Image (cartoon, rainbow, N blue to C red; front, side, top):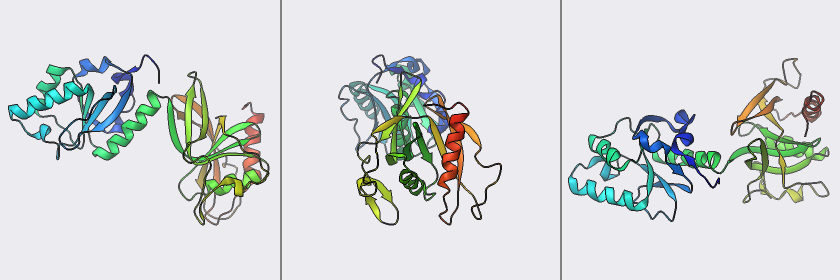
Length: 294
């Protein structure tokens, strides 16, 4: 995390749709700096200890009484809890309005208050991911990570597309296995992405037909790596029919990750389990010939 932290305004910028935001009041608090942030749910009628963290508090208007109770005693007790816990922002889930007494609360404390279309659990998950991305500068993606011809290559696609199968076939052809399923991507020096397997799953392969296995049992004598700079994304695209190719296949585009654009090549897959790994290698080699380098 950056020592100087970030502002709530920067944290929310460009993420309004992702968080389902509807209303944002108390904007004078949007410039406040956040340094050690955690997302917390207002549980059991109380706010937990801050433990030195700036807290984004998620509240459910259908369950959390301070949002629906208007008596003075409840409001004052809630206000003291919020002050003691050093709350930086309150997000009300599944709501498109803010009661008048909470408008007054925001004016009095300077704490921004937001409403979201999403439920509390989805909201907490997305806020936590946003904090990882914009403060810690790392995200997690579901895919298979390899090193091919010196390039860090991430294979993405829907569940069941065969990402793991394709990756294992490529390793059998001499490429380097790094990780399956959960891939952690970090931004370094503001201009490069470094990818590796998440610590809890980096030594595992998720095989739908036989369960979780250790890659060493499949890649005996094959090279493996702990991580790589990310240069290229291969995106599995479902195609109907057999293994015939079309001239339009292999479309190149870009995918934005934490503000950086990574080249992306579409790779066809077929429900009959067919993978043309030679074609995948050709596409990566063509990318290198056209100036894509490690």
